[in-house]
Amino acid sequence: MPKWLKDAVFYEIYPQSFYDTNADGIGDFNGIIEKLDYIRGLGCNALWINPCFDSPFKDAGYDVRDYKKVAPRYGTNDDLVRLFDEAHKRDMHVLLDLVPGHTSEEHEWFCASQKAEKNEYSNRYVWTRSWGESAQGFPYVGGESERSGVYLLNFFKCQPALNYGFYRVDRPWQLPVDHPDCIATREAMKDVMRFWLDLGCDGYRVDMAASLVKNDDEKKSGTSAIWKDVRRMLDEEYPEAALVAEWGVPQQSLKAGFHMDFYLNWHLNGYSTLMRDYENHENGENHSYFKKDAGGDINRFLKDYLPQYLDTKEDGYFCLLTCNHDTNRPRLALDIPELKLAYAFLFTMPGVPYLYYGDEIGMRYLDLPTKEGGYSRTGSRTPMQWDESKNLGFSKGDAADLYLPVDPAPDAPTVSGQENDPDSLLNTVKALLALRHREKDLQADAEFSQLQTRIGQPFVYRRGDLVLAINPDGSEKTCTLPAAGEVIFSIGSAKAEGRTLTLGAQSFAVIR
Ligand code: GLC
Ligand code: CA
Image (cartoon, rainbow, N blue to C red; front, side):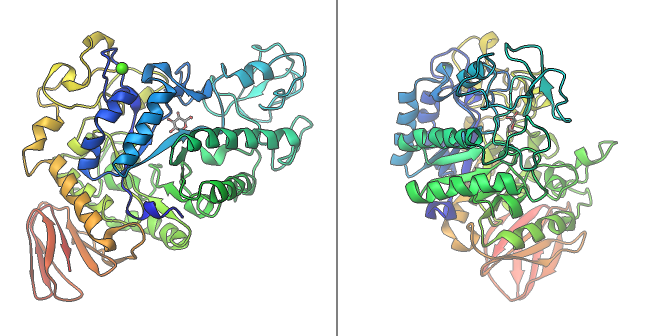
């Protein structure tokens, strides 16, 4: 386990939308470099950058055309290496996004694979032998290749599935996982990983990490074996490199060798009840736990979270996120006072927290037409809002050329608008992250347990020797502490007298 993860706090950057330094309307590596001090100042000491590689951008870069070359719109490979170096100077780490399950249909491997004549890449993707042969229920494309047969897709039409083999082989066109050509796919992906690790990258966020082996069993044994093999390589060659899975099942991913997994926003799971509970109800009713007066119930989170946390706490980190590029911004349902409490919770839980760019100022989800395969996700991918200047400080280019429009609202939140207000969301995030770095008991490894979870009462929990209490409700509440203590941090109002803690409306406290 890389030691630096214990006290890591990640900042996710969607590079298109972060900061544009050459006025072409698209964010770039130089922009990220210029803003490293800002990110470090927030309290984030690690970055996850969404795919920044050469791509036709039919899925925002998750359709990679060349794994070893950055997309010219962001800069050059040398610029990315400079970003690694500048980050390291500030004691920060950088994860790139690895997309191992599929490539773009324009990747040179695929161009070779679709040729009629057999070649080294014929089996790099999954093909049936003839166009009439059933694809066995897998999504596929036919009619576009020189060779006979159809090929399987991993996600959109532009993303043919790479071939890591079938765990259960039940058709002649399906290769077993130990077929030399399937092993070659895995080795090619390790080669891609080494390429950037050798240049200074600190690890990867792995896209659709559970998707590699087809016809896998329920436990994902086939796919897990591949990641165990990758982890062995990392432990031997890059012991400080970190791997985080987009998987959402820590009992599988962390046992398969990942250091971290994301608690993803899945319908009706515990995480979805915290900030996006409107998605769980047909009539849009919102019972998100952090919504003031919505009668939220923390047990809906805990009964899903706790077994996963308890089963895996020795294996790695199950991570909480404010949002990501696939999810509605939390501001869609929560206002600023509600967001403060949500973040207080997310940033004081076990595992490694992830802050999505712009959530620190409460950027809005915008209702926008789809861009680069974003669909409804597009509204969470708009340019970062830095200040009151042109394009809210994102770009000096023409508004018409921006990757996506900035928030047109007259009260669009900006960094400069919040910097000098001690009570702003931005400064609350800074205070919370500073607290987390100060207190070992709030970091990734310290034990978590629940102390009081009754509906309508504050949620009281323990991290190490600290006791934390949250009252998301609009009225004052009291609760009993396990022992008398002193309030060392608060949002809103909190008073401890003996073992009684009084929490004002929408308040949070840490007690020692
Ligand atoms: C992951 C990414 C998403 C992408 C998909 C296909 O879910 O987070 O943005 O569209 O995989 O690569
Ligand atoms: Ca640019």
